[in-house]
Length: 183
Image (cartoon, rainbow, N blue to C red):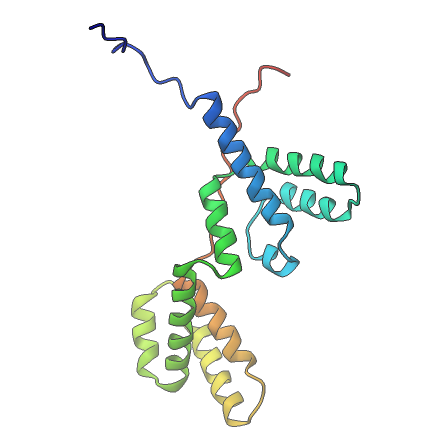
């Protein structure tokens, strides 16, 4: 029985088929991005070039033009990590379990901060990088708003601050472009 494996063979990277699957996956993510509303899309930290191409896609009426634009969006998407983009889309749509848990935790923390002074001490211990003066100001304003039956503007700002501490925003890393020798 002959052994056909060569132990000296080095890994030369993903196969053409694997590269094509990755490109198609990223193009599918690009298509999914075109289906998102502007508010949801604003929550995803995409590079400016991709955002511009997505806006251009929505201006087009022709099926063929939209198909070509999707391919261009897919090309630009190749510079991003597909898993990070998927996570960012899920987080923006509210489908990410970690994001939902962070949302609930942020609401509880905000309510505790407004209700009791001891919660601020624990919050500062948990998140030492927070701007303490801003947090105290927001708590004070939120308490005044609640007392005077005014809209909860400071409470919302406090929630946003707490949420950004509990679940920091995703940063989509752009991969270094490899030199194209066929141009």
